Image (tube, rainbow, N blue to C red; front, side, top):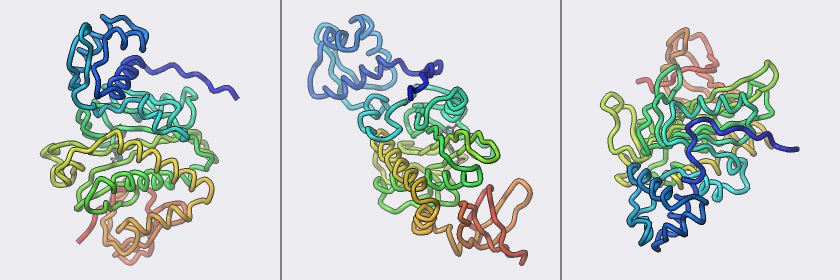
Length: 338
Ligand code: BTN
């Protein structure tokens, strides 16, 4: 079946800048002439010069000029679609990657792409978000090139009642990807906040368009704090980054590749084997699965209780302290209670 061609949303990074960055990165040990670059990516030498200036303004350290040639001093940690696409070969995420240097929210772009009929697996990435969205109407701080701001468009053949499982799938993938960069294992606070030392470094916002019996499309938006040297003052007590935790700068590109590969694995496992392996894995890696005393805040109430596992649809079960039995929590904030 022919795949529908979707026009790139306004503001998408020019594919030729993407090609330029890939070329420079792949030839990082040599000086490469302006004429050769121009010929390879199909633009004039003047255009190459203008783009080099743009990249320099974005913090990419390129030395040289059109006559002598260019040389990249340090590999830029920009989430370049062409490079990602090579490394994601064999997954549905390799095919359609939209990159923005600056956008309001990658989730908003991905939802619009879903509406226009874009295919399963499309990925939207931004170096910076000006209106990053979090759960429950909160905002998501999205400092330029410090974190991963990524939304994935999925078209899962499931009813909306199973959608909470998608959220768990994404949380497990992000957790496995980040675990390799941390000295202590990250925890998952239901449904998918990633914590280290009790502070959050990754959050996931799942939005969807569904009919009563079928999810039309879902967007899984992942925000991970990676190289922030400091969190904004108002968040410092509750939020952290991988860099703050490890005192090291991490490759966002490598992390994102791992994350999308794990997402592919868990998603396929979920479709092939159902909820059971996902719930088992969640029980293994989340201290919130069972026996944790928590405060739950939903749109209609706030109460305390002890977590008592998950229902087969991924809903959290909480044994209420007020004696009113087990409460299934479909959505809400979970906080550890004393
Ligand atoms: C949360 O509140 O924990 C969820 C945060 C989700 C943030 C990500 S960043 C990429 C994507 N685009 C958005 O606007 N939000 C999500």
